[in-house]
Image 1 (tube, rainbow, N blue to C red):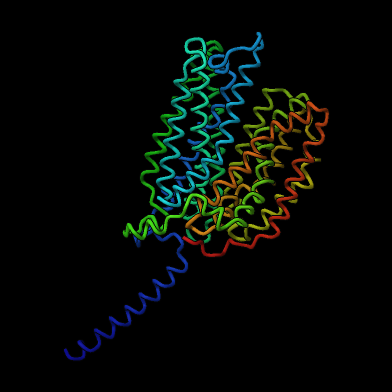
Image 2 (image 1 turned 135 degrees about the vertical axis):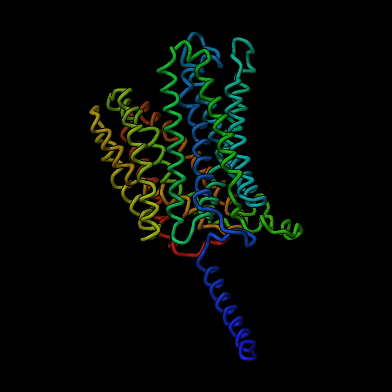
Length: 462
């Protein structure tokens, strides 16, 4: 009995030492530990919360552009008998929403840094759903006059605020939820879900157009798509409610400590100006290439090569599916070999090949499909790691706001304007200059990527 009493405390001490060493190693290695010492969240649930919600956001965002041709005449008056005036007005409102994105990136990013990622993600999906419902309920110009376009502008401003904040919040949430050696993989689902939302929007518009007459689509059919988007937002909200917070300070029980830790609205810009400029440089080439290949290329083929409109939509859809499938592969590759090789390959590839690829576009179906898919392979070097690279640049305390504003501003300046710039070059008689414009911006990003440290194996600050 005496021997047992002597050995038992010794065994307990040794066991406690082993536990301490295990906990120490786990604290160093396991980056997915939940805030406040809680049980680590299900990574699949975290991934679904960010990805499905993000897909819903982008469905609502893209539905506007796919259905604009149907509701333009309902909301805006025709100018001197010119039927293009309502459509141009509708796309002007689309642009207004785009330039609201930096404001959303700053405000929602600050909320994500002050109140937690979950709070910001909840707000963004509520705003997007509310914006979609407002579009669906927009009155016609014939019944309310100027109130109709005013309601549409307000709805689009709300949606722009939402989508600007969504990237900042979902990027940080995705990357902070990832386990060791999986940040690149989780990062890639930012563009998997974005593409899924775009495909769902185009598919919904195509299905409604097939089931209804053009008159029915113009009268009420387009509203169905936006009501569907509002309902989808409720689904996304329900899924996100089950997600676990990834920002440690948001779970701090001490209210005074929480208040002291909360950053100011412009703290990321004021204290980390170099990182903010770095986000602009990282994004410039990526966003011009992304919007050129995923949004403008079908129009480019129609305008410059006489490509059939229906075939261009088919090619666009096929290439987007191919693009979505590539993203996890790129993310996993970056977890193995690092982010820089993929970024450098993307930027140098586009700097060298953007001009010859765009000049290869003809009116042949296979030609456009090959050009679009080749560009998607190169583009994956950026899109599959963009969320991870952006998140790894900033400390957790200001990560969402630090990403949100410079990223959204750069997208608005270079990505959102890509179709307009391409069309302007064509109208000015210099269509051949647009590929050089794309190549030049990618070359700028190439030199920025050269200065980046490799962050794939660094521990992420939370």
